Image (cartoon, rainbow, N blue to C red; front, side):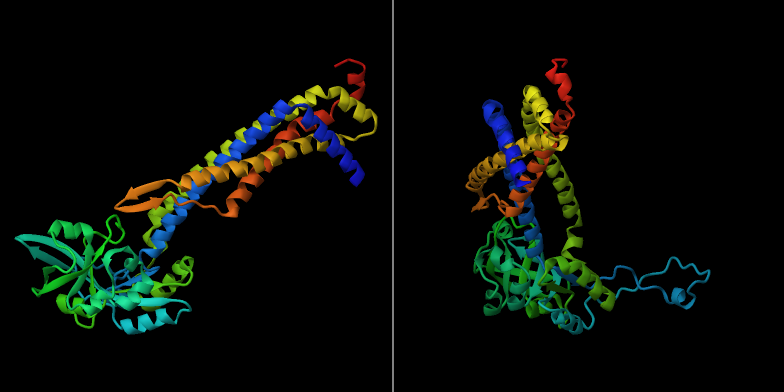
Length: 416
């Protein structure tokens, strides 16, 4: 069996080496297809992974807020459940906002293996400076805990989260807001809450420009100082939860919401629109790069078809010597596999070069030097190789199938 396979491999190699020009064209086509597949997929998958990473890291994986997905049913509807009761025109009672028994909710979040919960209070104030009013949404946080839940600390141009504890009345704002106010590090800005409380705040940190997820009109304060400014002592209205496995957020959020009733949003739910766009983007990307590999396989089809046409008499002789149809099919399929394999190896090198070129590009955005995120994982190389080999085998099998059905008698007699 091994001897027969070795003979078939020898015949296939002779066919390939005789037609060097067509062999080179076929190998070059596969190599270009594989190389650009690697470059495009590395660019697209890398940018997607970086985008998803930012979605995951910029905010807690789960946000529990003092909202209910559905309003509390009216007492009459609960009393006469299933009855012919219709209530309209009633006024919904405004409850004091805030998470009730938030300590128990926070304890439940922290009890999840690898999870960290961070309590916070959000509200709105008005910064009044030089006759100008600037609205600002403030978030009161515990710096030591918040640094473990979100990446706000990594987005600071100046200062640190710890400054909120070191400086009384400290606040962290965005660079854009600081420029609009004409204020920088260490400057004082007066803030007034909706209940009339006024307090002088000192800027102890500036968030880098371009971080739209953090919000250019959002400020961070110490939790107890935010509670005092907003007139809501001992109240929080949000708990952020960071998990060991971000992709488990939907399940955990559903569990917490079912247990306590408050709205628990996972990062997947908050970014559903973006994730659906990424799915459409992936479909388009893999369709395009698959078309590239498919076109590259036509070179193998042409090379093997010409080989079949030129070797018709040799095929007839092999058939008359006792070679079966399967043997002849295997010869030409081996030719296609060899062309695809060499093309894949050359394509890997081409793709590696293209990725290094793309990875070396620098972009100056917001005062920072950024590089194109690329996915250089072996998975991309394996996908390119698998798709190319499969296309090569199929492209060579079509003419090989035709060659195996040749009637040796007709060829040797000169009838065809």
